[in-house]
Image 1 (cartoon, rainbow, N blue to C red):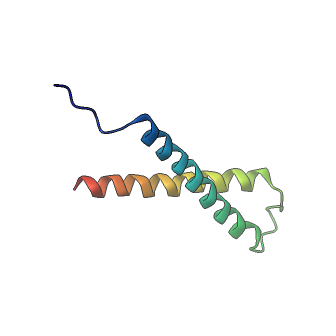
Image 2: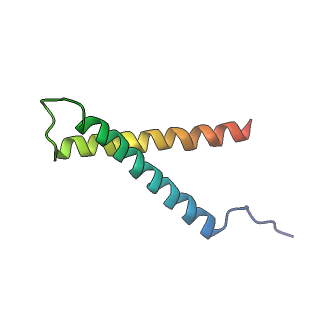
Image 3: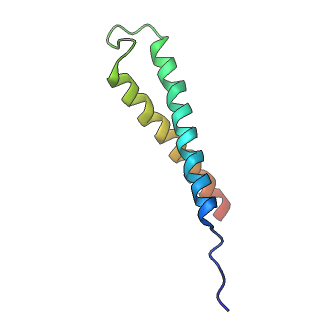
Length: 74
């Protein structure tokens, strides 16, 4: 008898959507901290700041998911 892997397609979809949502909102938090700090080299509607913030949001979320996964394996 073959056992399933424990991951259904709906579970994977929910994990991907949660990852994208958390990354986006982390990026928004980082972006708002950049924009409300006095910095003369970043404009308010800067694409550079937006890209940097979204990358930071993804990095923070990857760390959270990775650390959580690792700690569950111990």
